[in-house]
Length: 254
Image (cartoon, rainbow, N blue to C red):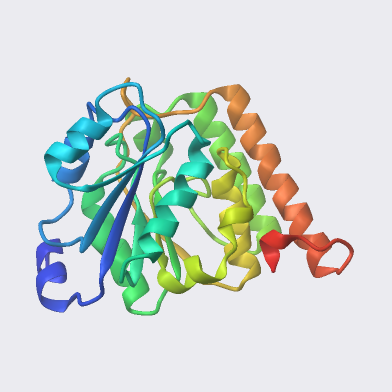
């Protein structure tokens, strides 16, 4: 069975694709072209006050556009994305970066794992082998940090996720309805907080391999922001433990 068969014959749920966009005018069309035709019921782009023609390009492509009047950050963008998705009839919501870094053809496979009840959250795993990741353009320092932090987070959180830091994610509607994501950071730490929340709420998390591309137009955070991102994960994990021990109540875990 190929991906198009999965979509047209066996796949019934309503799917919303959300695109947290910032200066994605050059890559948006290529990203959408990789999605199987007819797969998505809704496609929503949230523009975080881009300085390029992202909004113009999205309107030309005929997808729904929500514009921020100021830059709210990566986490703030996702909050708008998920609120907009929950306003639709979507059963499954997939976050896809519109920078064409991730291979969008994998989206139906991710959604099928949720539809079958195998997972509640599915991540795209960018790192099958070191050689593949580095040949795809991933900086060596980013690869090393990813491997060390993913190993550590799996160990302390009791998971076996291949890539804790993937920005290609699929969620069941229930996940977004139950997790208080509006309490999370407006910066890149949002992703880590969300996963730790999902674990705290006992949702089942899995992943699938996804080819990834690094190039000039693809988004990537600096080493300094990567460190801040990592500290956000440590902070969220500590907050979860304190909340569970009833030492300090945290709205992110209620």
